[in-house]
Image 1: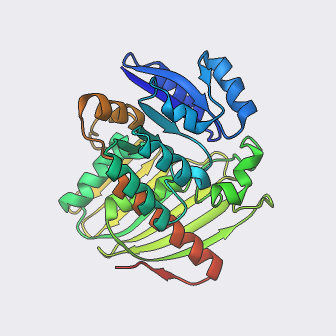
Image 2 (image 1 turned 90 degrees about the vertical axis):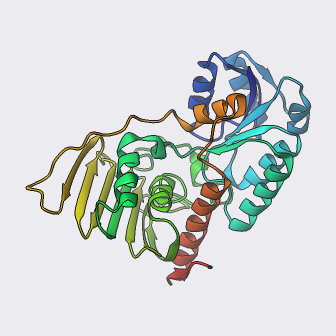
Image 3 (image 1 turned 180 degrees about the vertical axis):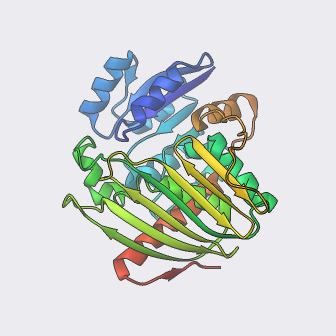
Amino acid sequence: MLNVAMLSKWHVHAAGYARELMAMDDVNVTCIWDEDAERGAAWAKELGVAFEADLDELLRRPDVDAVAVNCPTAMHPEVIIKAARAGKHIFTEKVLALTVRECDEIAKAINEAGVKFCISFPQRCWGRNKYIKHMVESGALGQVTVMRARDAHDGSLRNWLPDYWYDRDMTGGGAMMDLGAHPMYLASWMMGRPRRIQSMFNNITNRAVEDNSVCTIEFENGAIVISETSLVAPMNPKLVEVYGTKGVIICQDSDIKVRLAGQEGFSVPELPENDPAPIRQWVEGVLYGKEIPFDLKAARDLTELMENAYIADGTGHEVFFKK
């Protein structure tokens, strides 16, 4: 049995993670801490578990083996490093940290403690994306020239995101830092090492952070990736398009079609099954020693993309990645 503490309800996915964990036969959610004590106490009452106002006290509890971190992104280094040094296994919502330097500090603490780590990259679990990665790596598409990935919703347009979602000091950014993480980590996973990045972010709803954004990234394999996201886009499907010298894949939500050289028109491929959600893979990694693919390197790669994306937008210049 894995005893898990929920660290904050700040993130919009926190309640969902708690429900997933509480539905597992081999997990017990024992307590909650929140940087907003009033919110945390109310959530603990709702879930029927203990509330700890002091994070250090929570991390000393014998009924806490692991933590699910959903506090503000800017607080991740402090909270995760404390948890690692207390010997707690760590699941965290994306993005791991706002800078590569902070990612390296977190990784050092986790590696020294020897605890298990997982970051939530759910779209890497989808059968359609596993299929695309296989087609890219197998060479079936030839050399990939362009990949376009778009993930968007209308959270800012229709005001269903919390007000604190637009506090740059806590979030580190807007649409790209939040929802844009999905296209970014898919691009890194499928295309490898980035070479340079350009960004254009703007604001439709006059928030303190961007709600509409596009990055173009050249990868060392020669592919150009267009990473798009928006919080002002109703009725927007999740899109992934991959264009290569020998084939094309086009996805819209669950629909996917492929055309390879010599093929008449598009066909619908058979897809692999979805993998378990990252939070389940984390539990199985901790309890049963299974591999957790959403590791510190993947987390660092995402932060590196994000940090340079915001530098590119802020300066109006393309940014080259360090070798």
